[in-house]
Amino acid sequence: MKPIIEVKDLSFKYTANSPLILNSISFKIEKGTITSIAGLSGCGKTTLAFCLCGAIPKSMPGIIDGSIIIEGEDIKNLNLPNLAQKVGMVFQDVDNQLFLPTVEAEIAFAPENLCLPYEEIEKRVEKVIDMLGIESLRYKNPSQLSGGQKHLVALASILSLDPEIIILDEVLSELDRKNKKLIISVIKSLNKAGKTIIIIDHSIKNLMVANSILLMKNGNIEDRIEVDDNNELLYNRLSGFFLQQEY
Ligand SMILES: Nc1ncnc2c1ncn2[C@@H]1O[C@H](COP(=O)(O)OP(=O)(O)O)[C@@H](O)[C@H]1O
Ligand SMILES: [Mg+2]
Image (cartoon, rainbow, N blue to C red):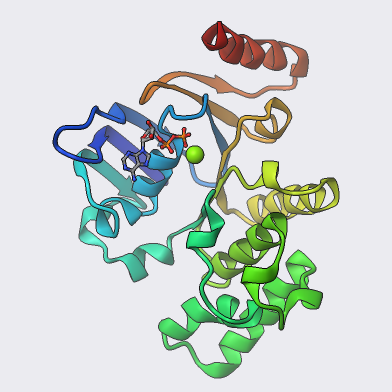
């Protein structure tokens, strides 16, 4: 089967004179899997995720080379609204993602932009509010919510487009224990329904939700761990990877 995402020799820098942030990265992700991207702060995880969802270079400038093929198509050839239906990303810096006066308006925004019928938009809004248990936030102003609640609302706003690929950039680490449990169970049920999930995180426990873990260092994928049932071995490999870079 063809991978849902194929990244080939991807390099990126923010300006002509700045260093390479992504340095000829290649990897594949199979449809219906959960993949984690792990690495120390500053290694390029968020930059890579912005490339995967098209924000780089379509709305954030920079110098990009190589290719990203999603569902067989080079994303260079897709515009952002088309790409948003394939890849939804919850930003680490979630304040850059929420801009409307109510949670309900945030969730309805993308389907409204696609000019979906009113009843369909209503249905999608109800579905994601129910899935994430955020009815009590529905008429609140997102700017007044806590960091964790904002991440829930941003997740709701991308799920209303029903994308095949969902990227969570350090979302789990922002949530309290109850909401983290909720999001992990939502991730698992979306994954069961066939969605492909990418989780960026630095907590070893959160990374272990994945089927496969890409270890990033200085703009490169250093290694890839396929997760099996040996949690102890996995924990040791991950903590070794982080520790070896801290000293
Ligand atoms: N908008 C930007 N302009 C210039 N440099 C940036 C920008 N965003 C991130 N960087 C730099 O790119 C590198 C990787 O950052 P980032 O992708 O955010 O890493 P991570 O998510 O792994 O912490 C860092 O050195 C960071 O300072
Ligand atoms: Mg980051």
